[in-house]
Image 1 (tube, rainbow, N blue to C red):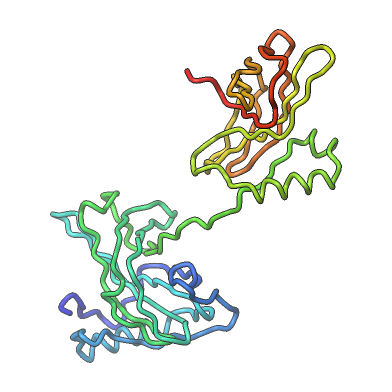
Image 2: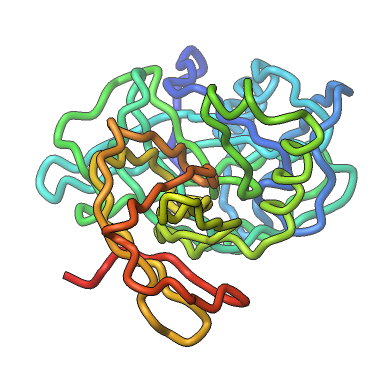
Length: 299
């Protein structure tokens, strides 16, 4: 591999380390443990490395901090940017503290500044590194073409080559307003939390409403309790909410607008809330509530 350069023995690593649990990258892999593992130098079988280069990599590898058992790591060595094209070549150790060989697949890597700002992003096929032996450290060059580089100026040190990790799936959960926590019995809170857990969550990015209970009062008003279900990864603030209540026959039972103050619903949660439709908003007094639904009217 002609990209390997002749470094001086006094040269130090310019980049930082980024270690992750192997189960973040490799399917069916074990999570990281507490045992410390020192990784040994492993050169790709197809590499052309002279004695000086090999000595250099051995020297740098000995300086690396031990990994925890079942970790994968990227340890930055050096970074060079082509002044004409803007492309960036990053040399780093790909390290594995697994007890068995591993071949990695396609994954996105990020080049980060010392402050954590993203400088470049690209998907690499890490299978090109070949099979990584157990407890090994393999030097490799990662090329970020100009189109994948997001910043012009590159730092000379303390940058980081990092795995882009997929956000872990967090179960959709119940969120209670403080007033509800104070007024609702613990047993009822647990039942409601269990109901939310067992109900199919909203689609990613979707906000919808699920009816919990309804009751007509002597004054003719209709009280409905809904779950406001936020399927997005961001908190939402509801200040005004128009609502339609529809019964099993598909008839509009009640319709009106509500000022909520605003009402905050955290990301990936369902929050119960009661809406009171005064008698003048009720359009059908003999509604069939064997099935019913609530939704904002179409604009």
